[in-house]
Image (cartoon, rainbow, N blue to C red; front, side, top):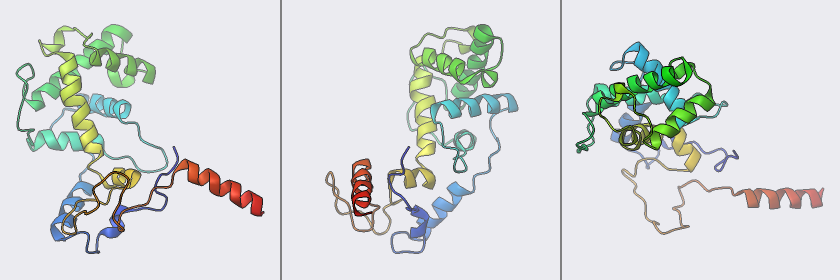
Length: 213
């Protein structure tokens, strides 16, 4: 995938007027999360890591965002969403039950735990979960589709886009404190925001350089 914001690094704003001390402390905390488990068992940790790799594949040219550690931190610190669907158990229990059920489904379908399967096999099981077609006893009555829609997807994707690496990819300037954002309309940006390089502009520039050469 082409770099939409070449050379952009949101951390360069650290000592500018864009961020205050509270913002710096929050981001430092996110960058220092250890890639170890405090909540999940070693078996659950392996399965969670494999699920994160399929839901949010990451490029090989940089260190990955530690998604399992972020999900684990949320469960260990009991950072609740403020609501819960009646069909789902509390978030930590939902994750533990869902990971165990996914391993059971993997054993039944392919003879191995989820993290040992091929990417295609893993994707097939996740697709069946998304469609509500996993019915093993380990689910314990928890709807697999609700687990996918309201735990797997939001917890993993929110973890990814809470990290500065993801902000670089989308050109996000980080928290709006204290500077704030002014130009909020579509296709407008503040002068301190990253400028996107579109594939069309890159191609036009290459053609122009070729003619000049």
